[in-house]
Every structure is written in C-alpha cells, then in structure tokens.
Image (tube, rainbow, N blue to C red; front, side, top):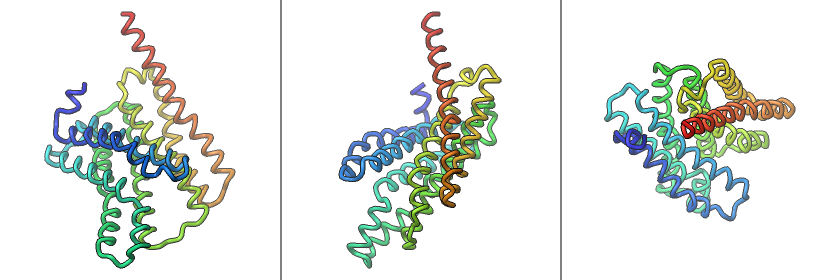
Length: 271
C-alpha cells in the first residue's frame, strides 16, 4: 500500500508535504503558545487537516487525467502554497504593516500570502474535476465530491480573509463569530468526508446503509454554508439548529464506517 502510494513524483511530494506539516506542528504550535488555547487548538486542527488532505490528494492521483509533469507541478503548487500559508499568515502581514508600513519587502510578503490560497485551490480543483469524471462508485464518490466542495469553500474563504486584511476591511462581530465557529467546522467536515470517500467500497455495504450514510453526510455538507450565512445574518436560532443537525450528519457515517472496519478486521483475524 505504501509503495503504491509513493510510486510517482507527485504522490511523493504530497506525502512529503503531509509529513513535513506534521513534523513542524509542534514548532508551529509553540510559536503561538502565548495565545488563547482555543485558537491554538484551531491552528493545530488546520495543520493536521492540511496534512491529511495532502495524503488524500496523493491517493486520488489516479483520478486525475493529466500528464505526470502536470501532476508534479500541481503537487509542488500544493506544497509551496501550504507552507507559505502557514509561514506567512495574516498575523504576520499585520505585524509588517505596523512596523514598516512602506517597506517593499513587506509588500512582497503580502503578495505572497495572497498567492498561497490559489496555489492550494488549483490542485484541489483539478482533483475535484477528476473525481467528478471518474468511474468511482456511489457512495464513495459522493463523500469525495462533498468533502472537496467544502475544502474549496474553506480555502476560498481564507483567500477572502487575507484580501480583506490587505484592503483594511474591518470585520464585524457577526463575521468574526461566523469565522471562529464555522471555518473549523467546514474544514473538519471536509476532511471527514474525503476520508470516508477513500475507504474501500466493501465498507459501504450493505447498499441501503451506505446510501443512507452518504445522504446524511451530503445534507450536513449543504448545511455548513447555510449555518455560516445564518451567523452572518445574526439569525442565532437557525445557526444553532444547523450546527446540531450537522453533528450527526458527519458523526453517524464516520461511526458506521469505523464499526464496519473493526468488524471486517476481526473477521480477517478469525479467518
């Protein structure tokens, strides 16, 4: 399995990027050790999900109908984009603007930060098109497409946030609340969906149960942007109801898949 995952340069780059992010995780968290613990947990979740996404993209390279050189280029884009996004975040741009507002090098860092989300979106979007056109079976295909859509929404929102900081846009309380809760929710739901989509097709049996779990997840994926919009419009009741509806929509398929995986492993051992 591991040898097949590392059989091409693109897959090696993706897996190497994921491993690098996990290795740098303690150092990244230590740099923000004086911040709020909740913010630190969100940052750790962000890094872990990006590392997981890198391994998933490596696994899905067979679905991408482009040449090996293009796949390698896309993998490099993802590697550079993620490292840049983690190393040069909006917090650093604010510091540069405060200390040396007219420095040329400070502007270059800002441009580099703006360029990092598109570098991540490009390979994710190509994999999305590949999965969309592939012959993958239901419900694994539905999990992957739903998770990739949420991933695209998440990275796109980060891009918007960085641009807003560059334009000196003042965020309202509703926007801060929406980003604080729904951005991590979107990322976790996206990662969970892609992991479920990469599971062997046998774990989605029986067909009726696999279809029901996939429909639950797709409903939860649709509710994520709805909940974000409800928070922006300060409709607290709708946002709370949406959050409680998303929770079982993601947890139930994951729990069912985990139990089936444990049962399958137990049967293999006993046999």
